[in-house]
Length: 421
Image (cartoon, rainbow, N blue to C red; front, side, top):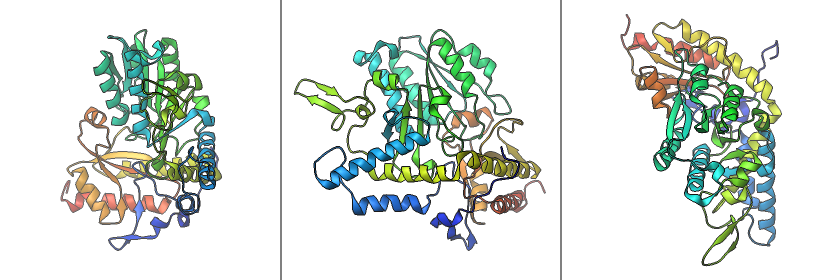
């Protein structure tokens, strides 16, 4: 990490940030839910739609050829940005789809529609963590219910870190899948990927990583991480809605059976049977997210131009400023206030005596946009004795001054509601 804090003068690149809310300049601290888009991303989609719009991998006309080339160039750009090869990237509508794809593909293998290496038997175990977003929890609950597998979870300690001792005891000879988030979308803590991968490998288990909160904020190298599969979402990394992806080791993608079937993913079809293309196309049935993929490639190039080491450095500076300020405000309890751990710019907290939704409305009236609720992580909130929290999350366009505006506004919440006076 550099000794001089990195700063980015990029706010002018994001048109939406120039507006005011309730007569106050917008302070957008909700990138953990969805990031704002730089103009280059908007332009990339519009340019495709106005110049080369056509269905890909179909037709022999000029527009079809150009659209296909742009679409596959986008695959190469995004996969390269994430440390993978083009054939290792399956386009999906987002991370939720990608994770469901894996769970249902394993279910198809269990039903005899794929290699037995992925089949589950009653009593086999799927291990997740207590920090998971519902998108990396509910698909595994459903798979366990369909197959008779047992779902187990690695607990978190009071400071929000994973209990790695418990992980070592939970991951064993019956473990077939270990699915875990790279960065908690509630706590902002970077989980020990290498340690969990090592445990899973010893057990011979498949590893599935939720990379939604890491791909936009950390240098991300799929190959170096050593996981078998990783899901990410485009709209959280400065890209469009409706696109994301599943990264996979080639041998895993080759052997996993498809989830959705239909056009685009077949080689031959008769009235009795069909044969499928190789990965990744065998997982891309139907109409592909063409303009969205092209927009996401523009987002990847934008982030690459900033440098992901510099992005992480900058967001760590913002995170430290935000956490230090939160600790000084009376009545604020930070979830996962661990010290000495790697984090991204996400902080979730409870304001004593004031409901999270009221806190969010108070901040919005002052131009500050944050997330309120359970952040699609109800079990983790239950672990901390809460039903909801307030979450502030940063991005490359966040400034020091905006963090201060947020903290100053937050300090006024309890006095405004007459709590703790």
